Image (cartoon, rainbow, N blue to C red; front, side, top):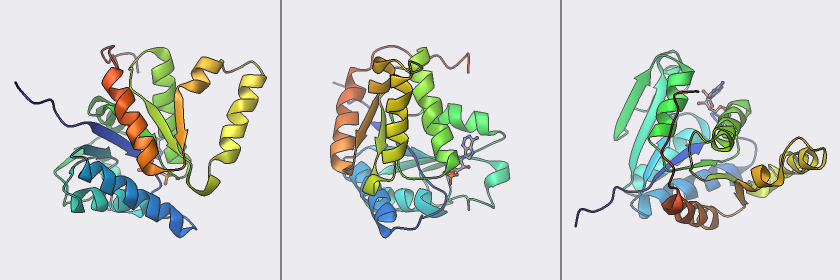
Length: 197
Ligand code: AMP
């Protein structure tokens, strides 16, 4: 019987390391788990910040790592030349679409506005039916507590429906969150359609 391809997990995270050592530790733990599980990491292709930490940890644990980076960011985000695959694309849009196409699940770690943009985009794409893949948020040291509380306020205000809110998987522990995303990714059935993005 042909073996199924390894689960491919897309990680969005900061291009900086952030102020707490817990952020980099969580990025390393995430990369290590992806590698140890024999999974593939898909990410933004840089060496900078938490992005570099997750990629280096996944590689060190024997994982395949696919990076997707726009040409214009090769210098700023230090394009990682040691990856299994590095795709240098022309636009941010191409980057996000290729990352989504190559992934079975998405997870956001602590990061800045780029990370939030990427998280909210795949979450809205899921809501719109462009893909059927799980989306998770790793809430390290409560970094995202106030964002999650605001999303609950959005539900209370009638702008977000509870089922949309429930599409976002949340945990503070990398193993717990990755295990849940891995399980949910097996049940995704609908084909991708990014033609309307
Ligand atoms: P940050 O969280 O701001 O450190 O950025 C994390 C990653 O998100 C970096 O690779 C940025 O290039 C990327 N990024 C920034 N802005 C955007 C955007 N509009 N769309 C997609 N990715 C972005």
